[in-house]
Length: 236
Image (tube, rainbow, N blue to C red; front, top):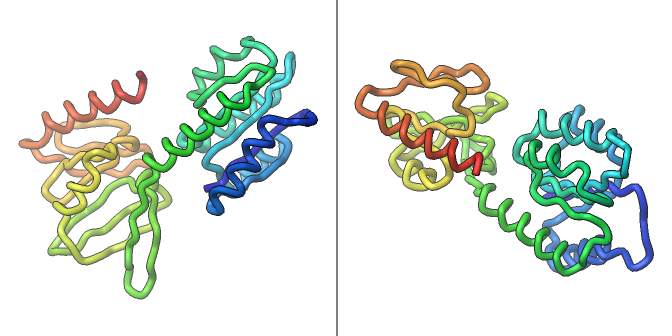
């Protein structure tokens, strides 16, 4: 897990720094990157991503807010924690889907609680699949998978970047694992990640990256029902 921390100011007895140091010692899988917001923007433009971003917004400076908008347009899954001197940007922040909004001075206990919650949400949303594709073992995160296709006891995982990984097995087994993770069975041979559904047509659905996936007549009403529930949940 990768965490970016963008601070304009540093203080003695920095509660945020103390919290991060505690997690460094406790969980060796978490890596922290301390940098300026502009550097973070360049990293996202070049294809590098983070799982959690902690960013400080200075009063009357909108640069960081614009950078968050840029990051959100590239990565809708990253959890973003705002730190600000007041509530001036709170409406805009939550429109951007941020995870939490803190005002200064930041309470150490509350900050650590929310950071822990962000970690737990990440762990829940980022279930990993170990896929053995020929001689290669690939670890896929669930939110990278657009759809899964099953045919003749072979299951193929297709990612948003267009990568395909095939394994022997039954699509039904994958359906059981993924139904609680925002996936829906659209056809005898297809399971789709509802996060990527852009449009539902008569006998197919279209993903955000333009892939057309067949949808059987008998499954159509269930797909629509499950998608509506998924969308409602996303916007609560």
